[in-house]
Length: 384
Ligand SMILES: *Cc1c(COP(=O)(O)O)cnc(C)c1O
Image (cartoon, rainbow, N blue to C red; front, top):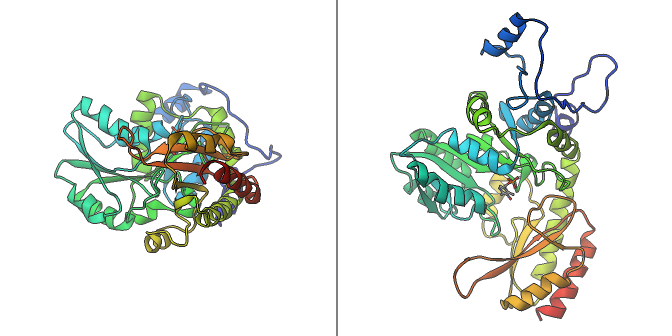
């Protein structure tokens, strides 16, 4: 099946008259007609059937969406979590143990970085941050006790890429697990498992669900790895997604392909507009025709999206603040991937003075003509 057909139909095979939309199986547990079938479900690990017992460890509404995402990511299996962060931390904890070491890219999503730097040491684990643009540096940072290489390509805010195949090739040789946060590209524009990544994670809150009405996460990988997470971290930490948000995610997924197409067009249009502006020093956008990792981008990605940053020549915070306040259409807020455009000033070196500010823009599904007009007006007024 082709991707657009997978999204609409996989996991929804129908027998007889059926609702065209899968139901929300809003239940905490599943009951059985007799003890033999109950025990058979509980204790037959080789059973290929979905084993629904209790919604903390599995529910049919989740499986409809998870099957589609696994197929798009080219992995055997996928699990849905109650946030991107719980997907990320559950996947990490499934391969880490006391004394272990993590190599991670220095520009990953903030909370993931803080989990590695601040939480893991409480349990005897250490880590090394590396410039992910340099595959040799990633490899050189690995030690005999390294258990995980954490990638995010493109990374947050500055949108840097890692050479995923080169890093994974080394990791496989050494028996080191690899994780890649694929939230920016979605499985439509990048399939990390095909490049050797063991754990493909998503904040499904962003492009996958796409409507700013649900917080959710995904981990995709081999069946063995997913079963282990489901039975341990998922089960013990209680991190799986409840049925209703899973249903919202499923509803959002239906339009993923047309939304990503629009994202690519709008992201590139806004980037081209910003590049012409005298107030803009440079634009950080993966889809830029002058993007500095263009060759690597074209090798490992089939598209780019509408999340980008730019560095204004004016670095005075009060003026940057006013620039964001005066923007029309763009609203002030974190997150991204929904229908609505968002803008935020972000310091590249938090804590340092003077800070290096960029404006992060998420371009939503509005008309790019209006987005550019709004940017032009506020640039002229505040950053000239
Ligand atoms: C938002 C985000 C996350 C965290 O996801 P939540 O769903 O908010 O928990 C992880 N990675 C990236 C790149 C993100 O942008």
